[in-house]
Length: 406
Image 1 (cartoon, rainbow, N blue to C red):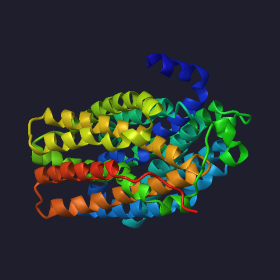
Image 2: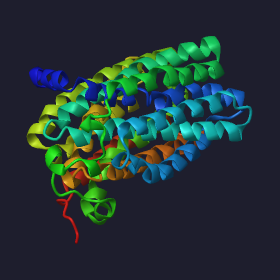
Image 3: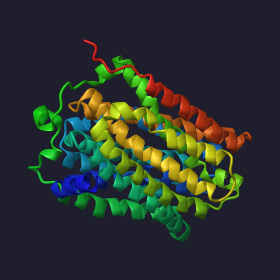
């Protein structure tokens, strides 16, 4: 197993690094970063848990609507150009947020930071690896996922220290400069204009990718398989986003410190890579179609542990199991869409799935914030997550085989 990963890295170091770089720099737009900015935004703009949750949910919801429109750009435009456009948009978004003096301006900054970070940046990183690495895409996605795991491991603690030392405004300015003067030069250096990797599928034959039977987005929406399978891809974005955004309320209820909670993200990052590196070879050998219904089992256990424990060490157990499940799910579901629907329109299909994931993550912050503001027992919230996970996994088990309607 280790030799297979080593061979892949040895042959395609620049391509894997390019995709991983985009996953890492999606971090400022991810929920785990906003969880650290959330208390500062709430204090600066007089927003409660429900108020910030509403702003965050609406911004994320609009981002979900934009993603299917602009996400297919990776199917038509060279990756180098995509990277420049998205990186520039992310830097501008962070600068807008840093200079915000009113809630509407804050909203605009949060909206485009979510859209460029969680949306387009992960779109480029995931789609580029999925469509290029045919037979070895499971292992490739596991390697690429190291970028996001490194972001999960470093950003929460770094942001917690930066915000407490320099304030949220200067922290965002620093991140914007990091994108402009580190991300963009590295991205351009990793790809050459002659690299087939950066070309959209329309300019590269499917024979080279080893794929057949490409679908378009309309075909996907006509098959029942998609509706049975996609809830597995949505469960963790929906539930974990709601929990992470309100991590302060959970810590207060459980009697845990915010510093302790921030440190648990490192555990989640490590377990996420363990899960993805474990899942990668199995996906390549047995196919994602056979494995995807089982990837959420650790998450159901994580929710159960968190529901019935207040001991501080319940938090790292929760984060470890949730991270492992997320790592397995990411590899399995990214591979599943390519296996089931081909790679020619993978950007469009991935953006559709990504949009539904962003839409799901838009609902939970406001919903959970409203429930918490109205006295919901957090343990019951965790328990409902366990039952929901089991139900979604059952849907995957009974999913009919994907058939293209003509």
